[in-house]
Image (cartoon, rainbow, N blue to C red):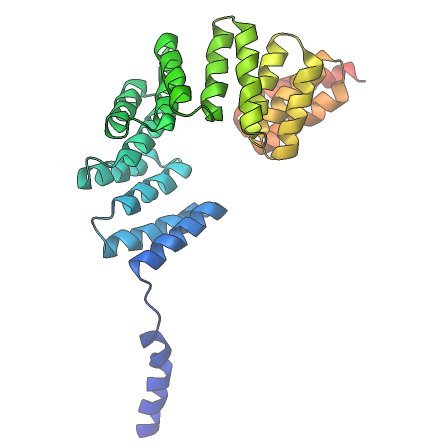
Length: 276
């Protein structure tokens, strides 16, 4: 019996000595999981973190971001709201909740959250960029333009502000100013694929197909999983009568994102008829 009890003790010992992570360690592990795209693991880590520190605004904010990355928007809103309840002056949670509201099309709520973030932290240029984007999506170009101008005044190196302002100028048919802003955005952040994607789209819209192709090629070089780059480059190839290349790009776009599958499959069928 004594031997049995000794063996049982050895069996249980490793479990009793299992390391317990601190709140700080769990938060770091959650951040690491976020950086590698393992959002489920991030949720587990941040959940354990807030169990230890139930008033951790950062913990709930990051938990909300992890849920948002998985498109679990109700859970994300709940956690951003909890962070705000804990600290009504936590501007980042307002901004992140505003981004989520923008994604789901609740633009008035998004604008309200960004406005609150700006009230708390009026010198943060990115809050103006985010609110400006919500204004554009809501159809209020003048307010959007004002926010992007303000963002640039606060931070002349904010490439997102220039890129978004370029979109507004293009919508306002001011092609010269639009191109100038797209160029500035790229000069400030030459490794940001979105800058090239938006300028390439501008070139496509003004029928400068050679420059559009260069920009979409650059996007693919920077991010080979950007489905929009393949989709838009496919249409450039179609315009250039390079049907084989267009088919390949449309097929890749579908593989990366099936959202436009029906439309692109129809494009592919039509192009295959042309290359017979």
